[in-house]
Image 1 (cartoon, one colour):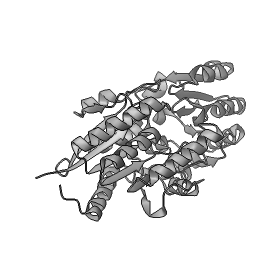
Image 2 (tube, rainbow, N blue to C red):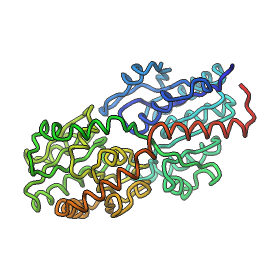
Image 3 (tube, rainbow, N blue to C red):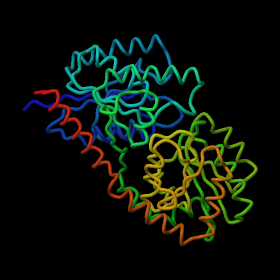
Image 4 (tube, rainbow, N blue to C red):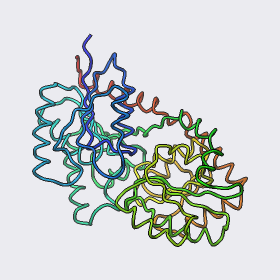
Length: 388
């Protein structure tokens, strides 16, 4: 029996929520129904790579060497031409693009190739905290144009869809909300290893561990986390801090944390993120812009309460004072106040953690995510009357 041909297109396979989402969507695809390809540009940058995991799952990567994250007009045109040729040759029924650059170039190529179904998942937006005002306006205009080439737009949260619509991107009927799922199996194992992980981090009994995880880029707001750490350290002698990840701000943030000496440890890239989160007493997400905050799901799954910026799709995940605490972005005093209040009230902290786990497990599993994506495909196949 012939299968529906699907191509997933992403700029790079570094460590990140968008990349993990795309990988698992391909890995868990119903192969009796769908014949799925993964197309990626070269993986570069300091955030690490998931390509070994992709290959380990038996997935071949179709490499598009001209598809790069940076704005590069000549390479972008070459990528557009190459992808158009590939889509025509392989006769895909569905092209599903991920992130901004792959989304723009990939959707234009799919339209030129006559692909009947084009789906795009932005995994957040680049409209705040990334670029200058004029460049942001250019990207908004590009997204408006690309939306006209798109059958459906997948927002990670209802707030994410509302933000895009407020910028005039797409029409309400184009949007569907499908969360970015998490593999919960490692989370359960991480909880069992909490004491061992804390010991490996030199966190002693009675100490209070506050941490962050993510790309060390300005939009993630970790400078405000470090400022908050200084305030927390003054109020809580037992507080210790860790920050895991890499990026262009690593050296700058390490220098900023210097006055806290051994109380603040920069961990760099780590393969044991669930274990780190399980070892924390409070997880902090200080982002300036966030599509959903997939790391919030991981923190919740291991029973660690979160203090998170009230931006993007975060309030769709963190319900203030019910399963976490929301604070204004760019506000280290608010972060510090929330963390200190949780440190001084263990019963409240425990209640938030329990509610957080109940709210995400199993509702936000990767299996459910893939089921919803493939249900969308089936709806569009029926709508377009496609017969493989």
